[in-house]
Length: 125
Image (spheres, rainbow, N blue to C red):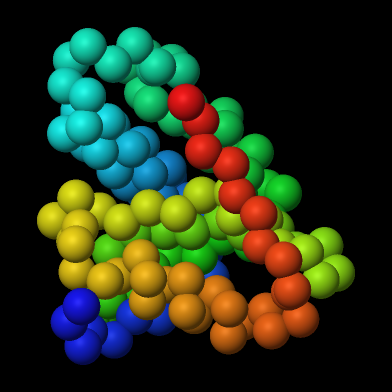
C-alpha cells in the first residue's frame, strides 16, 4: 500500500450525479474485468447497479466522496443504527484500483464512527 492521504468528504447535492455515474462505472468496470461480457447480472440499461439502488442508498444513509491526494477516487455510503453500521456502497474508480484507497477509506469510516461495534455489508451474487 502506498502512503497516499485518503479522506472522506460528505457528498454535496451538486456532486450527486457524478457520484452515481462514477459508482456505476466502477461496478461495470469491475464486473467486465472479472467476468467479461458473459456476466448477465445487469440491473438496468446495461448497469450492474441501478440508479435507483444508488439513489436509495444515498437518501437513506451517509454518503461520502473518497478523496486521495486531493482528487476524487471513489465513494462510500454507510448507514448507522446505534452501535451497528451497514456498508451500503464502497467503490474506487478503476484508475485507482490496487492502491490501498479502499482500505484507507475504511479506516476513515471507523474513525468517523467509533461507536459502531459491528459492521455489516451485503454483496450480490
